[in-house]
Image (cartoon, rainbow, N blue to C red):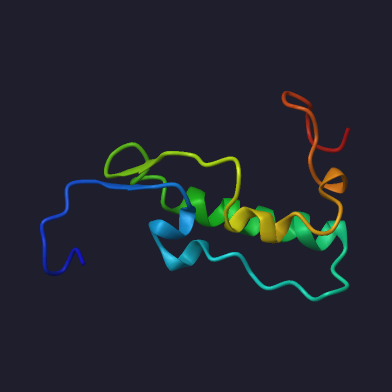
Length: 90
């Protein structure tokens, strides 16, 4: 779209609204919590690589209810999620 128009800003509620580089990978049916954490880390690294865009011409309006991020939670999200403010690995 930006090739045809002079786009000033993009707004989205899903990372994939900005780039296909953020597509959540398909994990096998038997994926472990570690597989899910690794996939999340890879997606976070892709976000960091595009750091020049965030808050400049890409703006996220978060939707915590649903989204592509759910694909990476696995069957038991408690295996991956931790309370806010708690460091990883605790």
